[in-house]
Length: 546
Image 1 (tube, rainbow, N blue to C red):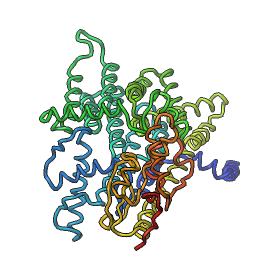
Image 2: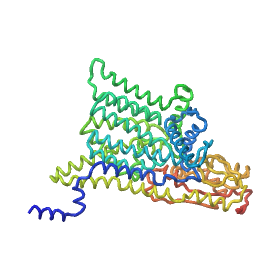
Image 3: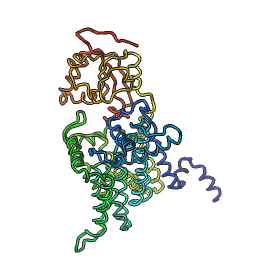
Image 4: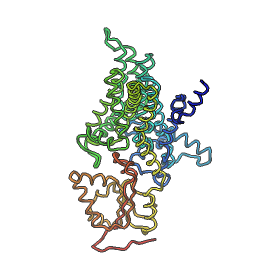
């Protein structure tokens, strides 16, 4: 009979047998990391080598890091962003330069950023993004168990917002790595206290601040962890371990930002520049009531189910296990309060919160599935519920991430527009372009960069003898959504377009899932390109072709 029962059990559906068969967590983790890395590196060469300014923020970091190689000066002299990530980028570029020299590509450092530096820099960001997924697994395993760690890693690995920003040479994903590392060491402080964890938690928080100033707020997590595990004695919780943590923080912040004290006026002015910028305006990305705007971004994006599960998990965890819940919730609350108070807003400001939401979602899936199966008295149901819940959370995010990556691999419409210019506009023509425009041979034309086309009115362009206007900044689509706020700028824009003749238009139509909720994705990658011929004296000159 046992043999017959065994044979009968083999007749169960394959899915049931696979779900019941234990799989080593190491292989699951490896699969999650491999998928995460693939999502973050697929399409990472977008725009290269023809053009490097499709993302408006990458060039500032790459140019500063590359300048270290040909000047040897590690003092960047500008402190609107801390230099630590630029240092890491410079080290990576140096390694790439030596590799290229070994292949005979060059024998001396070029006094300008190579297009390949953008690819190398993006790859470094993708590595930080994937490592953050690993760190989240370790945090979840330390606080709640291996299953929660794996679920949290899977959630962060598939998060669309995290995938997007892992493609750029910018600060947010690297910042999130150091924040997650500070959380990991803080968790170790509470679960198995060792004096060394205090130093490493402080060091990670300091490096977060040296990557981007707002990251320094993560120091609240190790402070809280210290308060939770330290008995209140004669001196309260001020002891040698706390001093060790503060020393680690100073070592991280000053070590990653070594010229801050030596160039104190520049440091303070740079920090003031950032605060002033975020506290005043950036057309299209500003507003009041940002504490409502950020949730609206998430709830209208592909990450909606993901975000709701993570938020519910953090709330539920805080109610059921207040110590662990407080450890996970304190930074998101303080950081969100700080960011929402600013006028300027970008969805990327929420990237540092994603590991916390992933951990909350992982805990919710694990605990919720166990509770339901226990309540129904069907213990075998837990795994199926967990897998089903995970798929429900990640499916929209994965679909958007795959679509986004695929679009990045296609010939960019701005490249097509640039080819059109070279084929249809006569050499020597005077062209005004917006700051982040399209790739073509500028040496063949008289090109003027005007940052935004509305920097001047139609009469000025006519008086200066411009032949063509190229409008390629995606912010105009954003401004159109708030016509009352930006009436003045839009009036100049309409005057320019009505006084010129549209001769070519290149519009990308990505799936709604890709751009919904994340306005800067459309601005960075899918902004329409419109080429106008300036009308002079009421006459409509013909387009000259080579």
